[in-house]
Length: 474
Image 1 (tube, one colour):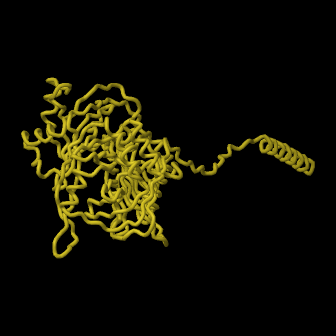
Image 2: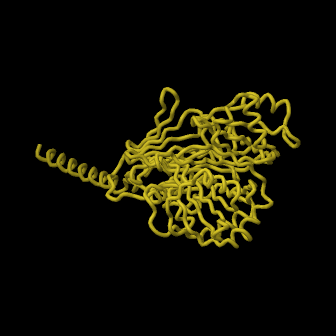
């Protein structure tokens, strides 16, 4: 019995030793499948194009005044060297002794009909702190003059001096300054540049200022220009490159792994990381980005600083997919600012009439911090077709408005050439158009071509344009 017990112990011990060797060999040869946790990579957006303030703030056009009610006009980005020559010289201009200078009816008549001069016109009101990026204004400026839409240089013959008028149609204010531009430079260098440019008809809307002088309201003339003759443009069909979801994620979110994709009942797509969000409307290439996080600023920003912050934000978030120019900044008393940049093709702004917005980048900011942005994801690539299009002259346009009872021409306060935008599947159609603005703040887009010699007209276009005699745009 004792021998059997010892034998059993020996066998059991040997078995345990063998099992130990076996388990040790398994542990020795085992290769666990480790899951490595990679460090989060913060991907900085790669803008298609970056821009600076000086590139985005440019005059819309220059008007040349020759006296005897003769005027010509040249547009920015029109390819004419004359505009570039004057724009380069603007950097050398500076203005002194900016003082309030209201005009009487007699002075308005002399300025618009008789004086020789040069009018630098902007699309909308531009803050003076931003204007300072184009030319220098010396000395203190009255706080009443916050922004301007044009600078009008004119030759005062009896004094042999060139004065500059800074005009604000919104506030109906005029300030006058002395300028370094000499009479010889204005008359012999600048005005000859406008001689070959198209003749213009000056249109005047007479209003009054809000300032009382001797219990009388002062006159203020809102002025716009129409070409005397039909104008040649190009109608384009553009191929476009849509921005991908991956590009959106990289541009607007720090970590795409934290982003959820939500589809609403109306097919609106929302991307969110719990704080920031992008809303993509169904069947459009138009987004609304929102970042509600806001840190109270300690420093009050100037208009220039606010615009620069908005430009910097776009530079870092998708960039400028095409050619844009600064249009306006609306500063509200609540501290919210709305900054708008408009897209151009050549010298003409784009005007969208549908939900497929392609014409603007619109930014809402609080103390310089962007809290929302609305923009298109369409990047115009190359035009796939173009043909010449003759737009109506000023007189023909007004006759068209009257005959078709689109608007009362006495209520028109501005009219300008643009491209009406239609986004189709895979391409964008840009049609030359007149945009007519009326005193009731409505806009009407007229895509009818000129019927005069050289005007494009066919049965297909007639059917198409009969439904677009005057399309209202909000």
